[in-house]
Length: 231
Image (cartoon, rainbow, N blue to C red):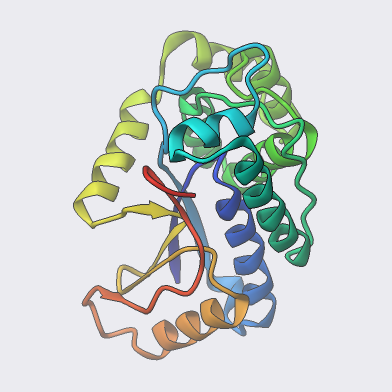
């Protein structure tokens, strides 16, 4: 079974959705035959790190809420993350452009390191307050995900894999992706949001039983997601 996951490294529900899928896979009998591909999706292509600007400032400006409302929203998200076994620290989170990280992720996927790189970068963003728009930070994180540091540096400096990132985003637009995480199972079923493990398990079991069905279907959305106008 092939699972394509469109996500962004700064989407809090994408990391939660990743954990939910992992928990679902633990219960799926065919987990050894599952091939997962992380696809690129930028929630804010124009984002940049600005000294002194917090994630609360970004949320306040983007979604028209007060700083206190932004803090309450993120506190609720942190509680959901904790339930998934994650620890979020929005106080230290740094707003960042994710294009370079997505380019490195494309390279990592080709080396069989897509999952480990994605995991390391998401942990760095949500738990460690790392700036993933910073070149040296990305090279270090790539190295920690067992990716050659010199190759990572060369990719960042050359602009390689930019076309691959753009193609992923164009495909997302073509199939109607409005928010992330967005999961596509064997090209048959698409589900959006950080849905609970039992829902993802249900989909995998359904897909494995209907291998002859080539149609795309959208199951009811139950999970939360990030999009251009909400998160």
